Image 1 (tube, rainbow, N blue to C red):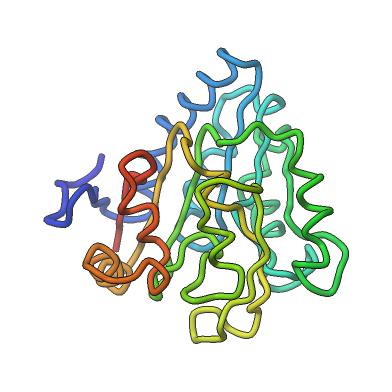
Image 2: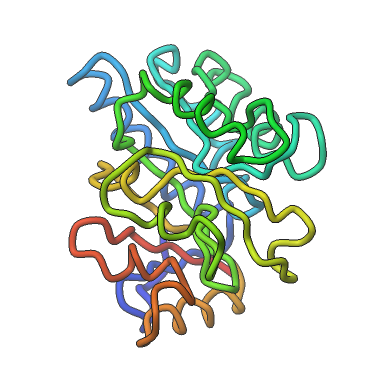
Length: 242
């Protein structure tokens, strides 16, 4: 069960990542099941990172008609699956196991030296996915990025546009958060707008401080998660654990 709501607005605290996973697995499963009942299929957009790992492993053994679920990555480093940093590989070893192995996983890496080179390929790959997702899992970095919407990155304007293609190429400015892998591909704000359930998962005191900064005044380009936090329609439900 979640702990008492934090003094931060709309933030639910959990005892640990396992408790967060247990609290969220049921609502996520119900949302995906409702989409399958309504349309015969569901779209589940997922992010990488250590924070949602326990949730993905819990969902992997959940009873659901996973064969009717399309799992699409929210973003990806421009690396091949099977190499360090690949979100696709992370999902293959966490969510896409057990019963959830029956789902279709759509990765965001394509041939090409840069994300721009692969952009047309990936846009075609996503053409049969009915955006917005029924459920989207987001994270946030200490720099205020979510998805691969990095502060002042090349391509950020396209990623944050309220209408347009579902995917954008990003070249982030190298920082301690990005590491050396600054070329990214990401779903856009337009693709995520109107998601049935949007969850922002955070862990650690540094992420809580970053959230406080993102909720304060300042340009969206400095902390791009503000694009969602300031949205009346697309503000995610925020869940935090130590």
